[in-house]
Image (cartoon, rainbow, N blue to C red; front, side, top):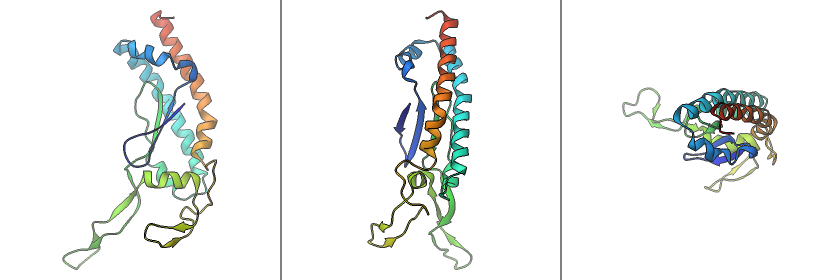
Amino acid sequence: MAFKATKGQGTFRIEVEPYELKNLISTLNLLDKESQSRVRDAAQPLSKRLAGQIMMFGHGSPTPQTKLVLQSIATPRDRLIRVDIGGAKKVGRAYGGRPSKSGKGAKVGRTQAPAGALLWGSEYGSRPGLDRAGRKYTNRFKVPYNREGYWLNKSVDFYTPVVAQEYISIVKGIINDLGLK
């Protein structure tokens, strides 16, 4: 399994790369486009199932921001089992802004927090401390810091072995069909 930071703020990508298939990745690169498409088609439902498990664990998380982060889950079509969480997607209620020039109505230029900015706090909780401006703050994520995590690590550890086994058998079947044993 590979955890990779990707471009963008706070994006967390989960790719299931079973150890047994480490050398097989180079073999997948040698396959024709039709066979690679078959692998992608087979991996997509497994990615969606892993994302579903992550969402189930997320809904049981004690941090209220987790529900916002869950809105950013994506399962790109890939040859590996892959789930992306976080990133620049705007979630939550709007904040900030400035009064409109007309002086009427609501503020303009309001923004929402990117899901990536909430990801790690929703997973690990928070501690009281000082922000960059030197102001004191309390537990921003409503729960104390937990080194093991509250939802994401638990869901990945729980369900990755299940989808990895299925992925291994699917890819081996495709390779056997091609006679590449």
